[in-house]
Image (cartoon, rainbow, N blue to C red):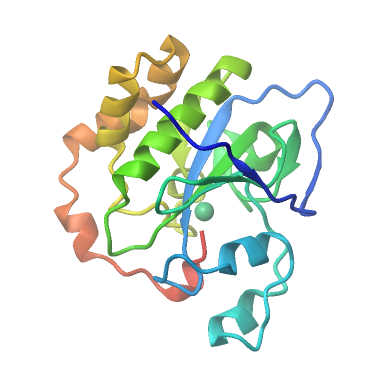
Amino acid sequence: MMFNTPRLRVSPNADSRSADERITLVVIHAISLPPDRFGGPGVEQLFTNTLDPSEHPYYAAIHHLRVSAHFFIRRDGERIDFVSPDLRAWHAGVSQWKGRERCNDFSIGIELEGCDTLPFEPAQYLSLAALLDEICVRFPVTDVVGHSDIAPGRKTDPGPYFDWHRLGQIVAESGASERLLVALAWKCGQAGLVCDAQDKMRWPFPLAQRPG
Ligand SMILES: [Zn+2]
């Protein structure tokens, strides 16, 4: 598979990890700014503290946030790198995974440009699969989960339109590492069992629970 070179846009919203930290978790998010609109500069501006509060009512409510993700994958599959995975990005917030709190400490965060009411694009799944494989070659990842899995009740992304089963298929067919297949097994098994029609009926969740 061929992908364009990722674009680098450094976010100041990051700090050091503990020297002995092992990165074992990847967290998948979804975000669109303004909500439900794609293609604009809002997400890049949010992650670089340059969002203009006068540009949109929603921006006025969130422009003060100091947040970031390591990676952002746009609708066309383009990847933007904001924070080196060796550093801690600020994407998870109050969170817990397998009994351990503060998931930012030991995770990598990937934002997909998306919303609650539309499927993600094929190019995004391909770009994400390639990125996950890169990450799993370098770090001892044991789990790839959604933001909603580590902050249930508080966060809903990547939401019911993110197709874990499809991601798992692409990863399996691309000859990815065993480590990545194992790390995806829990989410992909869940996607195979759960009928998501009911989940979709519960959407949209309150705007206050966004952005990703
Ligand atoms: Zn999120």
